[in-house]
Image 1 (cartoon, rainbow, N blue to C red):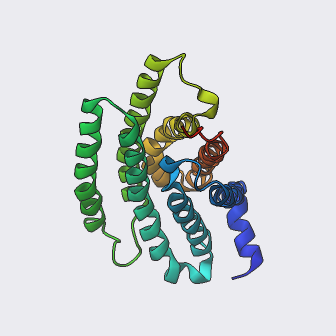
Image 2: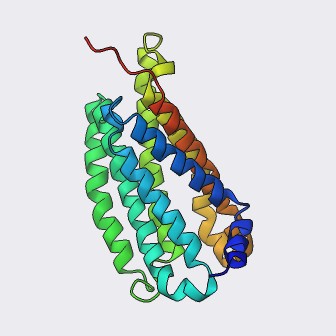
Length: 235
């Protein structure tokens, strides 16, 4: 693998890959330093590391002479992170949201998503040879994104009912939810059109995918901000 090949893949994504990698590394460092401050953030380091590994796999796998060996593995990993992402955020909001209807929705949506996730992988025509196709990943991500957007909006609905007694400045959940809201609301429109762009404008589609990296950067900056909130005073 030449440095020139690797550099070209970063340039096509407007170097947002590098920006995201740097943000993920910073998140890992901050989470290690503040790992005991907020119990509700316990699973976010796993999420961060998993996404970092996925980004590294993806970038290396598009280099020509390693594509055949690593590309399928990269797609499997990336696809698995979608499921991990849903479970971590679902668990996160299940602990916070009090509404029983929303809690039931969280359980039901996750129970239905798992067989849907497996089914979409099994029927993927490239599963055993070239990995999970972008078309399948886009469909599954869109469903996941809709679920998480609903949970995020449900959290804000409950939050607004509590105001002004909540100190948002030192509420880690608020900061993470802001990042997640922007991420899902801003990437879902592209996700819905991704297969169209892949079919008719493949070069543009590859460049537009950098939107995901930009909003992932924003999400993880909010996660870093969450870790930097003042710890609650023990009574």
